[in-house]
Amino acid sequence: MRKKLIAGNWKMNLDWNEAMTLFANLIQFETSKQSKADVAVFPPSAYIRHFYELASDRKSSIGIGAQDCSEYNGGAYTGELAASMIKSVGASYCLVGHSERREYHHESNDVLSEKVERLLENDVIPVFCCGESLDHRESGNHTFVTDNQLDGTIFELNEEQFSNVVIAYEPVWAIGTGKTASPDQAQDMHAFIRGLVQSKYGATIANNTRILYGGSMKPSNAHELLSQPDVDGGLIGGASLKVDDFGAIINACS
Ligand code: PEP
Image 1: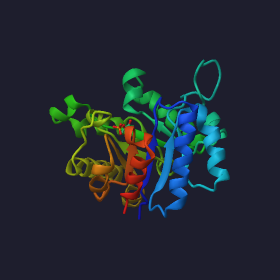
Image 2: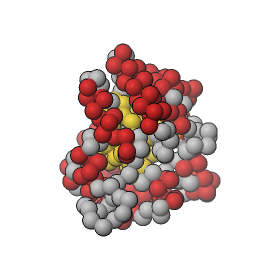
Image 3: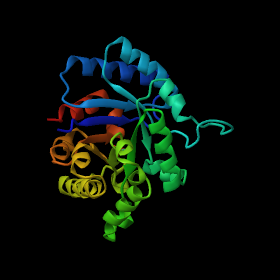
């Protein structure tokens, strides 16, 4: 049985005081509830160590993730962070291939594959993002595009490596737009992705793979989306910046 994962992608939001307040409130929320889901936050990397220490001090099980890492191990790459560095400050997850990275930083399948490899070498769980643009959805190419994003990257991994990857299906047209995939659209794509995993790695690995939905998930639509049989949690942007909204999404997991 797959346990749901609710992950908050804070992107480049919140200064130090705002971030500390939100994280402290989230710890308080999480430790006072018997949450049925695993919970993780992906703050700006400068905050990771402090969050990790605070979560450890308060005996919170909230996982901490980075929003990106370098495809290289280290060296003369100004501004980059190696997978070993984010691991050493307490990250247990890292996003890879978020659509904003693909669009603004032109990250190719080859680069994303390298990032996934570096993370797995350092025992960090890659949360691999995939999903189609509006054009691809409207032209009926959404399955083809998503298949391609997986085929050229995480589907190159061996079984042991793949078993440590989380997939996040995030239709680009639903990210930060307020438009959400309908529960049926989300379920169809998640079942499609799980089918691809099954053809490549077999039924056991497919049944154990967590596939999160991301794209304007909020308290009002979370329960229906999270009730779909192949939706194993959410990657949440905007609604993860308010403890009440993020908490309501965590509570929507049954
Ligand atoms: C995201 O950035 O991964 C995301 C899903 O954002 P939002 O929830 O704001 O659409």
